Length: 224
Image 1 (cartoon, rainbow, N blue to C red):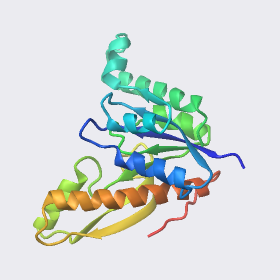
Image 2: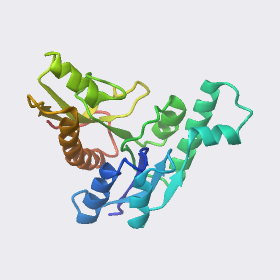
Image 3: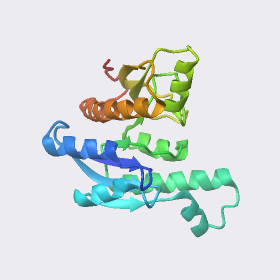
């Protein structure tokens, strides 16, 4: 059987260590993610440390940044038009590698239908890692917001999920959900570290499950 092809999208910077990407790289190498190859890592930030991790693993990389794209495309004066054109170009770059699955591993750009529709037509699902439970703390700073809600007595736990990507932020159908109790007295930084450790497990499970659901992802299995 020919290995399934995975494209990974990342953001981050020099202080963001690309550990979620590394978890996927290691799982593919060790066979925990079965019969798969990472065909490319694309980053929208040139200093994302994940680019270095990919290069060390012999994985092709690509830098695709919205601001740089705009500077090279001055004809797009409207921000919405620019973002949609950028997303369309991103889809074209991804499709060139003919992946079976796109994994957003700390990808901080909100993708539009201009990106998602070409992938859907090609039958390529995209999944995303988000450090919150479904319907809770969608968007940025999810861990910090969960910690504040815990301090206010609103919640006792948070979690990590892998979900299918749709145009609404962090609102796609969940694929893997793992809960995590927040410990009384721990700092936000301590919670964040425990969340990251859980992310490394969940992203591997999510990638393997998404691959096993191919070619149909309309009624995905969900694990808890």
